[in-house]
Image (tube, rainbow, N blue to C red; front, top):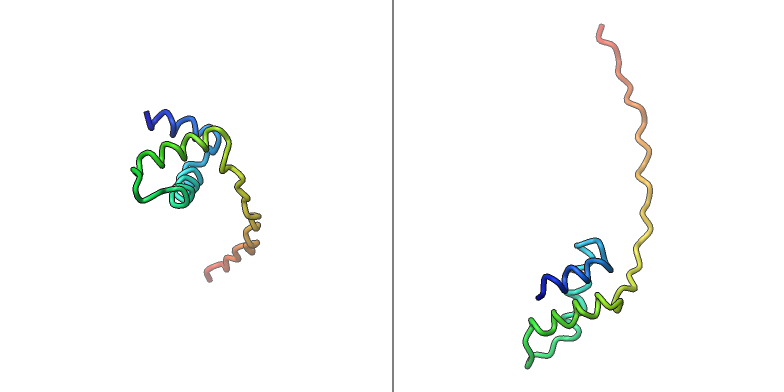
Length: 76
């Protein structure tokens, strides 16, 4: 059952790292100590699959620095 939830949530957040980070963050916020962790995770995966908790802001990617051409001195 959870594999279906992970698959449907993965359709919303395709990057697996971001999916797991989002689910972990939300599960920590929503988990009640008297409840089962499995139930909280199932609820979070269902919520992500429905489109909640997807307001991710990606940072700007800086271009890599320019590498100068390699100068090779001839062997004398």
